[in-house]
Amino acid sequence: MSTETVKRANTPVEYTPHDLIELRKCSEDPVYFIKNYCKIEHPSEGLVNFTLYPFQEEMIRAFYEHRFVLTENSRQSGKTTCAAAYFLWYAAFHDHKTILIVSNKASNASEFIHRVRVMYEYLPFWLKPGVTSTGWNAQSVGFDNSSRIISRATSESSARGLSLSLVFADELAFVRDNIQEEFWAALSPTLSTGGSLIVASTPDGDSNLFAKLAREAQSGLNEFKYFKYIWTDVPGRDEAWKKSEIMRIGPDKFLQEHECHHLSSGSILVSSLTLQQRIHVEDPIKILKEFKIWAEFERGKRYILGIDPATGTGSDFSVIEVFEFPSMIQVAEFRDNTTSSALLYKAMKSIIKFIEINGCEIYYSVENNGVGEGVLALLEADENAPMNAEFITQENSKRPGFVTTNRTKLKACLTLREMIEDGTIKIKSDAVLTELKNYIRTKRGYQAKDGATDDAISAILIVIRILEEIIQFDDEAFAMMTDKLDEDYFDENKASNEDDYAMPMVL
Image 1 (spheres, rainbow, N blue to C red):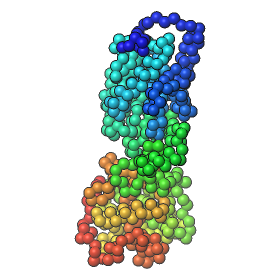
Image 2 (tube, rainbow, N blue to C red; image 1 turned 120 degrees about the vertical axis):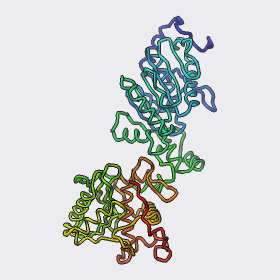
Image 3 (cartoon, rainbow, N blue to C red; image 1 turned 90 degrees about the horizontal axis):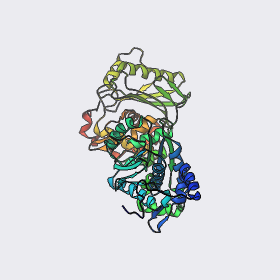
């Protein structure tokens, strides 16, 4: 190590009165230390003083004042440099601390230590802590007050074997999903003894651990203090800069990388941008057992119910989706994963009766693949079955309800996408939104990602297929749907033979 830039451990220093005053100020305030004594390497200007932007000051003070911090940052907003400066201060002025930096790549972890070393090297000699004989390399910096900063690539074993005072998880969203989960599981016991954690990243998708932690932090559902800094927080970025950046990376990437939107990756049915623009989740005005209700049922109005039954064993959900027609506003939802066919039938009758009491007209139907046949059997055997609600069956089908095939499901999916995109249908349920974010293209159509569900979507697809059937006698349905159906729908001779076979359903 250089004797000019690195102070050896336990080197005696003579302090002037000014030095002692400054030492005290620096020890009490990381922002003061950084603004007055830290230098950074600017890509075009070379070595410069670290002049903090207002949002960077806020972020550094958050690191100091809160045990758990999660921050979402626009690209190139200086979060890593701010963190490096803060950890240099923390290690220099706190004894016997171990700080772990984990990043999505080993090269990024090494770059973090490089920034710490540059800042250290240009501190005044009297302000530098001494560096131990083994504490100056590409992966770590160690000081003679027994504090050290260690950097590693994020993995399930990154935190193992260390007694940690502070952990910084940098760009967590860009770590593979399974590694995020394994790292988190391994880290939790380490922090249980009182350590602090800072998670900072630009979003990358909306279904990984980072996205989940960010959503919970925003809602106050976990221990993290949440901060978000977008492109407008960075001085010098104006509308001209935004326009140029959008031309370079496209609007979706701009939303993700500079406005910190969590956009779904992969070929999902409805784009993340459209979901954000078109679906506005609302809290229900009323909850009756498993029913969520978003609007009162109004006398004289019409409603459509789509029912997707499940086994009731906990793996999938039985769902009833209710939409007011013709506004196609979602007004109610039943969703439960422990409901048997008998209980689902009872729930269906209850909601139909509840709507009928208000003098409303009802169209309803059931997916009849597999479990749905049990609900239909109960309907056929019920002497007190709903009399005024109109049960809709697929045209030219020998079975009541709707048989789902790959072809009919794909067609209904594409119609649902168009209805969301043009605002014809209004979704209120967070469950539906979550499923849409994880509803992806496969070789034979669309289905939920592994580990996700799509039962609420399946119920809405029944609603759409009801609409497609009632266009034969309902003028408002005809006006709504004819521009969304291809010519094949009106030509029975062009129907695929695949319609004769029920598609295997994933239970």
